[in-house]
Image 1: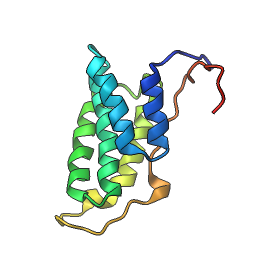
Image 2: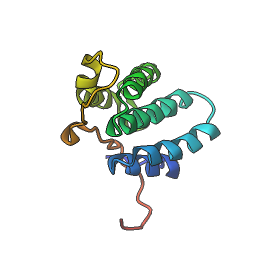
Image 3: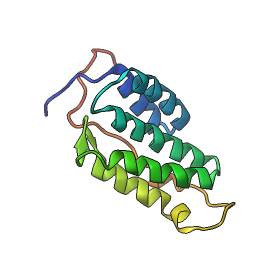
Image 4: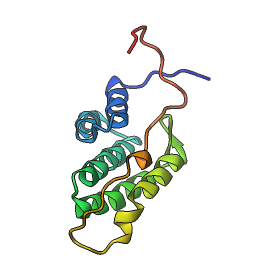
Length: 135
C-alpha cells in the first residue's frame, strides 16, 4: 500500500469525524476549505456538509440533517468513487443507510435517534505517511 502526504487539517478532521466530533471536524475542514482553490474545493465542502448533517442528526435537528444530507450528496456527486483517499461510494452508501429513517419521514419534528452502529467512518486508502508519532 502506498503512503501519501495529506494536509494535517484533513487528517485532523477525519480523526474528529471518526470520534463523532462532527462539529469540530466541520470547523477543521472549513478552515482547510477556505485555503483551497481548484478541484478539491467542492470535495471539502461535501465533507463539511456530511459532518454537519450528522451533527444535526445527533442533536435531533431532523430537518437540518435532511437538508444537509441532500446538499452533501450533491457536492460529492462531482467526484469518482474514490477521491483523496476516501472511498466515496462507501461513504455515500453508509451515510444513506445511517440517514434512511430521517429521509423517509415527512414529519417536521421527529424523535428519530441516530443508530450509533450506522454512523459512517472515514478510512484513507492510501494511508497517510506516518509522522513518527504514536497516537
